[in-house]
Image (cartoon, rainbow, N blue to C red; front, side, top):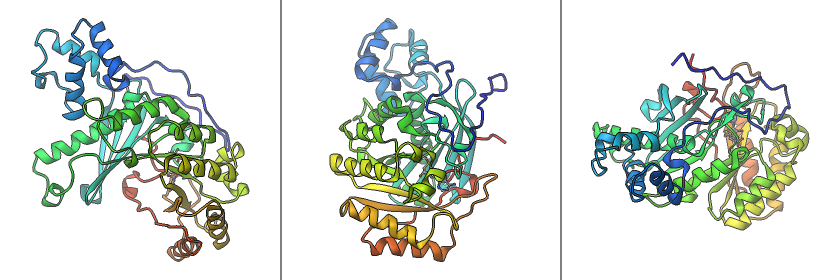
Length: 387
Ligand code: SAH
C-alpha cells in the first residue's frame, strides 16, 4: 500500500477555481465504464463470445459478485483472466468508520494511483442512501468545505464512481447474510438513493458522471436498475452543465448549493458565483424544473452570523417565489465543522427562524440531518485523510 505514489495537489488560494484536473495515469478499464455494446466488444476483443458480457453484467450489477469462483456459468478455461480484465479492482478499502449505531458507514477508498476518496452509506427506515464522490478532491474551493480546501487531485472514471455504489450494495448484502439486527432486516437490502454529495463537483466531471448515472438507472443487468428520481445531482451552479443535464432525458433530482441569496456574500462562500451569479444559477435551476418536472432542492449551509440573517431568508424566499410556485424546496444544513475553519453552525433558534421565514414565503423547507458528523462523514467533511 505504501509503495503507491502519494498524490500531490497544490492547495488553492482563496477564490481560485480549478476546472482542469491534473493529468495522471488512467485506471484500468472496467465493465462499468462501458455501455452494453461496449461490453460486448470488449469481451469479444478478449477472444470470448459476446454473450459473456451479459453474464458478467449479471454477476456485477445484479449479484454484486466480482469473484470468478462464484461465476460457474463462465467456462473455467480463461475465466480468471476474463474476470480480472473486465472487473479489475478499482477501490481498495483503507478505513471503515461507523456512526449512528452502524446506520452510517463512511468508507475511505484508495484508488489505483494512491488518490483517496470517500463514500458514505446511510440507512434510514425504508431507504438506504449512498453519498458518493465524483472527483478526488474538488476544484470549487468553497471555504467552508473540507474537500474544497484540498484542491482537485483528479476526476474519477465512470466505473470508479459506480463501484462505490456497488460496494455499498455488497456491504448491505453481506450484513443481511450475516443476520443483521431485527431492525435492519425490515429495511431494504438495496441502495435505494444515491446523492452526488461526496467529494467533488460532479458536473465538472460531466461525461463520467452522466455515464455513471446511466449505470445506476439502466435496468439490470445492464445497470443497477435504480429510479432516476432517487438520484440527486448536487452542484455549485455550473449553469451550462445544468442546462445540458436537463437535456439528457434522465430526470434525476437537481440540488443547487446556494448558501447565500446575494452575490456579495455568495462570491465569498461559493467562488463559482463570480462566473454565474445567484440569479443566473436560480434561473438555470428553474429551467431544470421546467424541463424535467423534478422539484429542485436548494442547499443552504447555515453559518453563524454569516448567512443566517432573517433578511437573507426573506431575500431567498422572495427570489424563489418570484420564479414560481411548487418548483423548489430548501434544505438548510447546519454547518458541519471542518478543520481550521473559524465558522460554526447557526444557533438553533436562528435556524428555526430562518426556516419559518422561508415557509412564510410559501417555500417548503426541511433541515437536513447531519448524519455521520462525528466520523467526519457529513456534508463538507470529506477530506479523505487516513490519519
Ligand atoms: N460539489 C457539490 C457537492 C458538494 S457536497 C456541491 O457543491 O453541491 C454537498 C453539499 O454539502 C453542498 O451543498 C455543500 O455546499 C455542502 N457543504 C459543504 N461543506 C459543508 C459544511 N462544512 N457543512 C455543511 N454543508 C456543507
